[in-house]
Length: 112
Length: 114
Image (cartoon, rainbow over the protein chains, first blue to last red):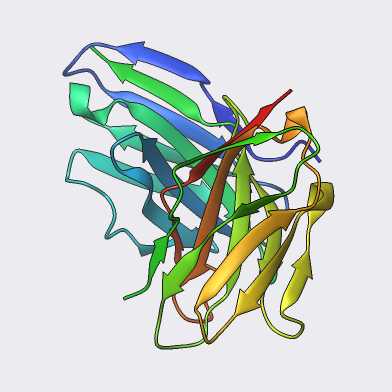
């Protein structure tokens, strides 16, 4: 299995631009999570899905952030418009009952 | 609400020496406990987990952790570290017995010195 796949690995954009991060979970996993990691705040859960349905989005910082999971093999995290304070590493993780989370390699986002 | 404390932000240790990374949590209910490792520029990888049963849990790469309910601790240990163990280590606790909502600690940076 290829593990959790995230793209792009690095993204540099200018303030105000739309950013879309992509994630392909491990096949057979029914839960998917989006995390953000920064030096100041550590690892924060943004949103998670069970069976493609958003369960808890209380960690999403504001309305500029949105996430979708149109099917079991794909999810997106969108920031529109982006701001410099959104700069962070964004991780996607997937799991199925009884396992720990499997994390992707992350997307390093820099907003100038 | 649950919280996780990792008392040591940085732990330097010489190669082949033992190491203990400390983790304490606060919760009034039963929880699941996890340790993850993050190598530079990579995602987190599960080292081990405690769900129930034996309080001594063995994980990958020679690591083990012991669950102590009375002290609400879940310290990570390895009897002899290698250079390749240099990484960031995160303790995590579930919200109740849920696999989904997991709270991560701030992390401990382990540096193995040759």
